[in-house]
Image 1 (cartoon, rainbow, N blue to C red):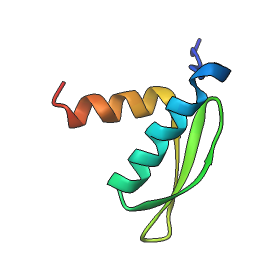
Image 2 (image 1 turned 45 degrees about the vertical axis):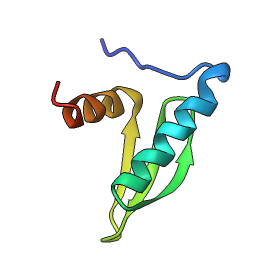
Image 3 (image 1 turned 135 degrees about the horizontal axis):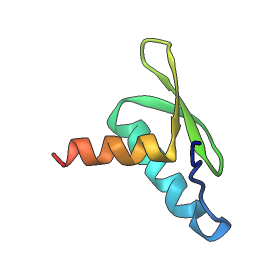
Image 4 (image 1 turned 90 degrees about the vertical axis):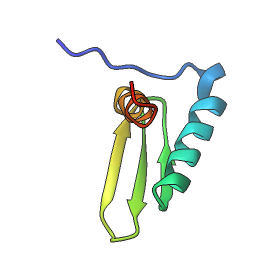
Length: 65
């Protein structure tokens, strides 16, 4: 069974800021943010749908963890 992580209403401002920062880092347009994920469009026209757990893994990888 898969556990789906989500942002509580009081965490949404932080989650939105994380998604915005990610989009800026990868030169993408932030398309949406919801409780479980965010969507971006990359410069090459492709789309990404990033869930909270995937974002956590991305951040860990960039930090070398």
